[in-house]
Image 1 (cartoon, one colour):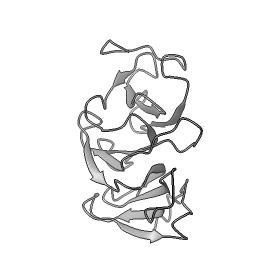
Image 2 (image 1 turned 90 degrees about the vertical axis):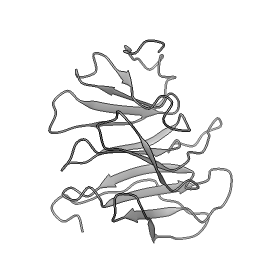
Image 3 (image 1 turned 135 degrees about the vertical axis):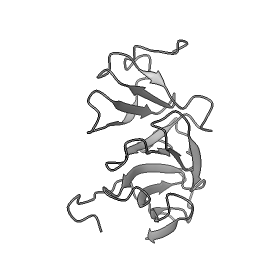
Image 4 (image 1 turned 135 degrees about the horizontal axis):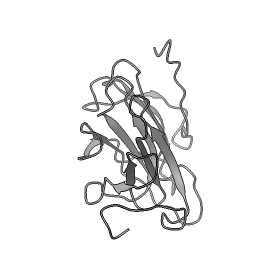
Length: 178
């Protein structure tokens, strides 16, 4: 899209959208990302889409998006395609927006390769889990599940099998997120 507001289709998005997330407390608001093009946002149930990451993230591939239930201004973006195929590029970690997608800050995990899922604690947006598939081109230790308890300032690897085994998805019980 060359315009500030776009009408998106699979053809204009490059055909592969990996993640879309709605904002339960804001009817009609959704974020979408995919294999190329960054993240787009709609506030009218998909009638129009606005690119929100242009010039703010270092890669075009989006693996996962998550919006905080307790503060919908907080949006997390995991980079790198979670669906490996012949023409893929690694991501460069995770980004966070605290103003509903207007601005983005890199929050770490630069060598996690492909991020399959980001999950935010339902009542504490400082607690975030990331499923890292890893570097698609070879073994690396930044595979598995990572957690931050301080909004992304520091990360702990809370699940690791090996430097050849990553995690692609996460689930969280909203009634018992611990």
